[in-house]
Image 1 (cartoon, helix red, strand yellow):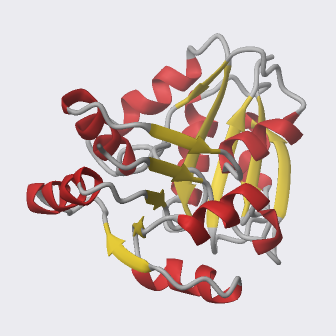
Image 2 (image 1 turned 180 degrees about the horizontal axis):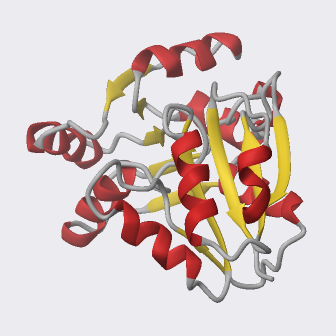
Length: 222
């Protein structure tokens, strides 16, 4: 009988955001699949949890997937975590879950918790009964199309951007959006230097923005 795969959300910054259920799950599983073993080890050390760590990330090959299947087939319970936030959301864990559930009768259990996109939406004040999440903009190919689709969206849009490309992103938004569209820019959510910028597309160029860190952007409607 297959073991269970638990999809465990971890803090996106502030370690106090981890849930009691997440801690309990991490303590009781047989091994933890993680994007970067060094990052996950820091989290586990903070909560004095010692477990076998198995790396699983964008570059993991089919051999690693087979190894994970073998562990589950042996009855081992596993937890899947990402470096921060909820696995499977703009994250390679999604491919692993699809692979396991489409070919085998493996039970996958969500252990919900922190998510940058939901945190940003919750403070936006924009309509959230319907919204569109678009992940990260492409670096080169189809990047223009990415922003064009935001411009014509009929619902609130939320996406991620890296600090390396945030200024380029704001220029693209200013160019393509109606100047009156409201924009929320969240930097380093839940971390020490968390910063929230509220603007309109027309005023994005006037922002004094710290480029360091990770960004979640929410584009509202007029």
